[in-house]
View 1 (tube, helix red, strand yellow):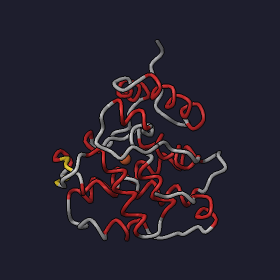
View 2 (cartoon, rainbow, N blue to C red):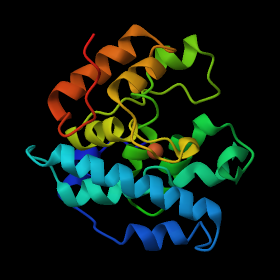
View 3 (spheres, protein in one colour):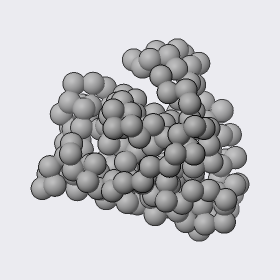
View 4 (spheres, rainbow, N blue to C red):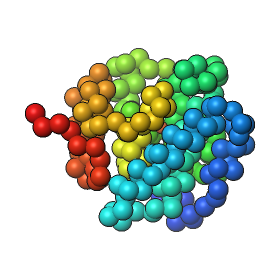
Length: 198
Ligand SMILES: [Fe+2]
């Protein structure tokens, strides 16, 4: 498990995320196109949220582009993924792929972006088939990417969701998820679709 994040943050590694993605996805496949469209939308949104925040913008772009790199190993036929593992594994699998490349800081974004970040409690309560580890975003960069990702769904054509839609989806989990998202929304929520007045 990755334990030395601060040390790696000092040794910043930059690379071309598209080249890395192409190592695992055929450029002509519908899955590649779907992944790139989603990842670019998330990266764009994350960068707009990060505009007035003191964060590493280059890292945000790179990590947002690669946050879903693990999806091809999961089974989600709706978006042309025909791997063996449940879709909820995609963050963890993405982490493993990027760790193998020495991209430990980017790897943390993969594992910590699912939902609003899974806690060990979430994994146990929902009986999720995941390793029992804390998968919550910690750094501002991780939080911004996780927040931005909630606005776009690959299975819904990546049309930007409203806050109401996101809150409705999160309400299927628990109150804590809504609270966490709203906290991020207050910090990062710039130029987002407005909720309707009650
Ligand atoms: Fe995503």
